[in-house]
Image (cartoon, rainbow over all chains, first blue to last red; front, side, top):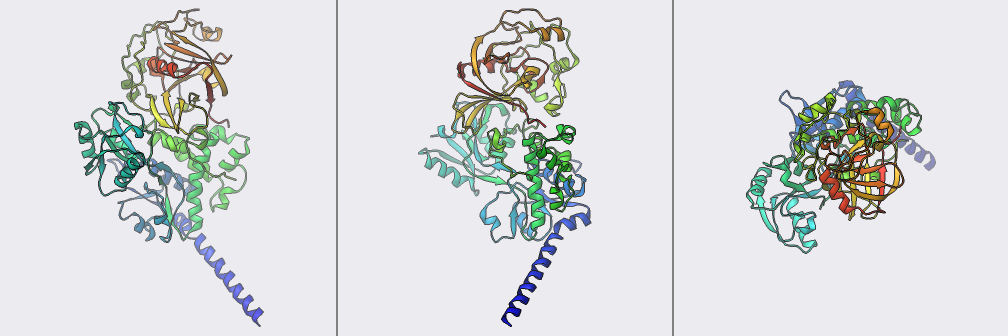
Length: 341
Length: 212
């Protein structure tokens, strides 16, 4: 009797689990396909990451990632509806289902993930707090900043990070509080502060606001961890995997030398890892609920990670952000994606 | 190219020879080279013996300006890493950082990858264009003594027993580009800076884009 009961219970539980798994599988991915468009939450305006032009067209690194997803899922990178979100509303809006993915320079932390119903799909950009200094007097390292005055914005984590960094390295500094980047520029140019500290990604944008951008340099030291990445709701693992592996596919593609510039050549390649990536071999796309050429579509739309980076932020953009931490692990950075196999 | 045009300090635009259209546009600062993928375009510019580029010419602005960058490496400080796909040359400084220079990569620079050592260094090197180069550009001299009008530029660092070298240039607008000839070229002011930091015997690692 007990046997029967426990078996029945187990059977019911298994049934429930199957049902749940199907419900989850049929969630976000199916609604995107039915809707015929991906809904993507982005920043209202952040140079290099998410910018809207006068005609209403979006561009930038975070924006391109959504084009890649739309290409992978819907075979059309333009089938994206962008939703501009403020800092304060972004996670609630994601939880409430107002978008399929949040691709909005958000830092991946424990507090934002555990128990919050949100999962970060990976790190798309390794950001961190850095320093911009005027070229003269010559400073090469953040460890040479002893005794300088530093402009910092109040009410952010940058201020305590700054204090910790100077204390840990036995240095002193004069703090100059500023309301935002515009005031920091004015103070730097006026000589009220020698350095300005905020996240590196923002420093490259701020530098362009200087009368003579070449007079300022951004030090290579990064004093905090700000891993930025796309986030999704935690109740749909199937969709989470699509987002995660699309990001990884863009990174792996760069490592394999596959990109917009080499796509034709890649389709003729006999290398197994290249063939798996572009879907000529194996069923990786199907495992994700997509077609096997999903990564090929994404790469055709936005290029590989490096191409996406250089176009929006790097050497081919106005900002000239060095790859730094975001260089591939084999080339001096820490960018690392698990293999597609 | 717009940014690039403004990035070169002390450039003297003295075109003395009949040149390709791409080069003329480059002089005007109007060639649309920057907007496109560097892999897609090879800057079709012939060598210009006699065009003057002095020691002061450095890349001062933009991504190809000499700058300190984050660079994780297990190689000893003083090691040179050349990434041809990105058009960057790094000198490893240790402590997770490197000094990065913008380079132009010529046809010869794309033909080899691996580890070599600096076998010789020379200031204002002489130039003896190899026969293949003469065939492509018959107007070139058979020999040219070193100096500010020499395409080899202000300094050269010879790589092992190969024909490859890191050298200066009298065409600083080619930095950041794939160019039709030469190996790894830096603006004269930058190659002088590099020369002082790199010793004979230093390791040079040349990385090409992954092969498909």
